[in-house]
Length: 479
Ligand code: NAD
Image (cartoon, rainbow, N blue to C red; front, side, top):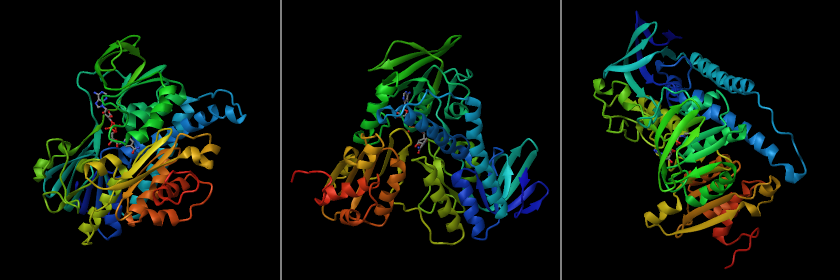
C-alpha cells in the first residue's frame, strides 16, 4: 500500500529515481537525504510504522526503560546522602504506555517528515525481482517498483540458538523483552553483550533477580577489560549470578518455568527460570531480500559487500547499515545512508569515518572510540596512555559515583589522539567530544588546553590529556 506519492504511479506499479528498502534509521535518512537532493523517492517498509528496530523495538524504547532504571537506582542509592525513599510502586501498564507513547511520537514525526519531502512510503515485504525492479507484497496486494537506483537498508535480526523452545513465550529475544509483559522473579540472560546487559539493567531495577551467562571470559567481549571492570564489579553485587566461559546447552519448557542446563568452565547445575532472554548477537538480512535476482553479491554470513561509496557489485544498487557489516549501530547506518544518497545525486561523498563510537547504556555506561590499547599494541604503534579516575572528580563524587574512568591513548611521536574509553554515568554522551577531537586531528595538548567547564564530568577528558602532557594538578602523578 503506497502513501503520499512523488514517484510516477501506474496501476500497482511505481517508478522511483531512488528506492530505499527498509525504513530504519539508515533507510529513512537515505530516503530523506535523496529527496532533499531532488530525487523522486520510494521508501519500502514491511511494518506499519517507520523507524525500524532502533525506534520501535531497540534503541529508543530500551533507553526509555533504562531511564526508569536510573531513576529507581538513584532513589535507592540516595540513603548515604541522608535521603530515603520508599520502595517504588511499579505500574507496569503505565510504564508500557509511556514507552509506547515515546515510540509513537517519533513514528508520527517520521511519517510527517516523509510527507513534507513527498517521499512515497510503500508498506509491505520487498524483494528484488531483477536489478531494476522490487516487488512489494502486502495484505492489500502486490506493488511493483521499478527504479534507477536502489539503497538496501534491510537491517538485521536476532541470532537464534538452535534447539531452544521458541514457541514458549517465556523464551524471549530483545523485542519480546521490551514488550515488558511482566517482571519475572528470576530472569536468565544468555549473552553478556550490550543488549543482554542493557536489558539486565532495567529488569533488575524493576525487581527481577538476574543471572547472566556469557560464553567468553569477560562481559562485553571486544571492549577494553579495564573499562568493563567497574561495570562488572557493580553488577556482580546486584545480580544473582554472572557466569563467564559458560553457555546454555539446553532449555526445556516446564510448567513451573524454563529448565536450563549449562556447560563450560563456570557451569552451574541446571536451574529453573521464569523467563530467559537470548541476546547472542544479530545477523544481517542480506539473504532475505531476493538479492540474487538482482545479481547482488551476498557473503556467506549474509552481509552485502560495499565500497566506501556504499556501492554494491551492481553499480546502481547501494547498501547501508547492519546489512553491510559490523558494527551494527544506528549512527553508522545514518551516516552511510547520507553517503549513498549523496553519491546517487552526484556528490563526491564517501564513508571515511575515522571511528564509529560504541556505547553500552548500562549503569555505569561504557563508551569507547578510536583505537583501544590492545589494538594499538597489536598494530605496533608507540603510544602514551592515561587513565583518569573519576574518584578524583568532584562532580562524580557529588553524584555518589566514584567508580568511573576516562582512559586515553595518544601517539607517542605526534601526540595525536588515538583512542578514548570511558566508564561512568553519562559516558555515552561524553564520548562525543573524543569523536570530534579524533576527527579534527586533535593532539593531547589541544585537548588539555581546551577550557572545560568546572565542575563537569567532561573535565575528565581534559584531565586524561593533562596526565599525558604532564600538566595535571588534580592528581599527583609521580614523574
Ligand atoms: P553482541 O555480539 O554485542 O553480544 C552477544 C554476546 O553473546 C557476546 O558477548 C557473545 O560472546 C555472547 N554469546 C554468543 N553465543 C553465546 C552462547 N551460546 N551462550 C552465551 N553467550 C553467548 O550482541 P547483542 O548484545 O545481541 O547485540 C547485537 C547488536 O546490536 C550488536 O551489534 C550491538 O552493537 C547492537 N546493539 C547496540 C546497542 C548500543 O549501541 N547501545 C544496543 C543494543 C544492540
